[in-house]
Length: 237
Image 1 (cartoon, helix red, strand yellow):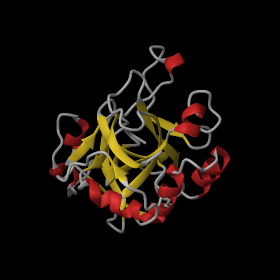
Image 2 (cartoon, one colour):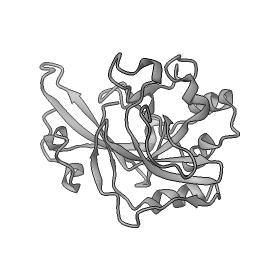
Image 3 (cartoon, rainbow, N blue to C red):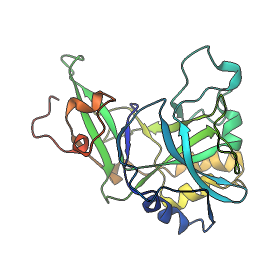
Image 4 (tube, one colour):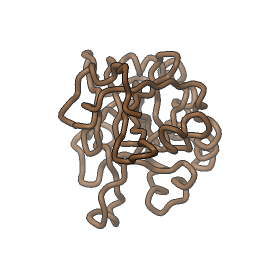
């Protein structure tokens, strides 16, 4: 998975899908205006959904995580492989305590020209249904009413194999869950082993997605308008 996605709907459009599966009160404030982000990049604050002791919270958390013992040794990770995250020394603590969901509308991948790898064509990938997506995530974030971020707070998006049909664009993709499994993923009562089984078995399959080429402006993080997700007629690759 390349490190860009879109999160542009009104928060309640995502929350309503989860609330049908996990009827808990929403704690904290939620902006009633559209989030309006079409080019979310690493190290920025992103609306992250998680279950707390008193209900659900959707709050900004930095995209990028390293455990406290690893900070400064390498750049923060933005993704975690589903095949190893549960047992990895890097992620195993937050696998138990920080399962969360990134509500999204689509993500971007860059396809390389086989003859000239310097030529790359961005594609925007969405659900065929047009429904919101729910990326499985892991993070360290504040709980309860304490909303001030701490040093070391952040999250990663879990990725899985793209499998047949999407490999021509990229070999990894976000682990996208249905609203039902997204709700289950966040539940604090779900044992780590059961969460691992869920992640390995219940990501949406390739047939659920569609993709189209978009303009190269998405490559610049300063660009963040709705035109970025528009189909272009003549892709480079």
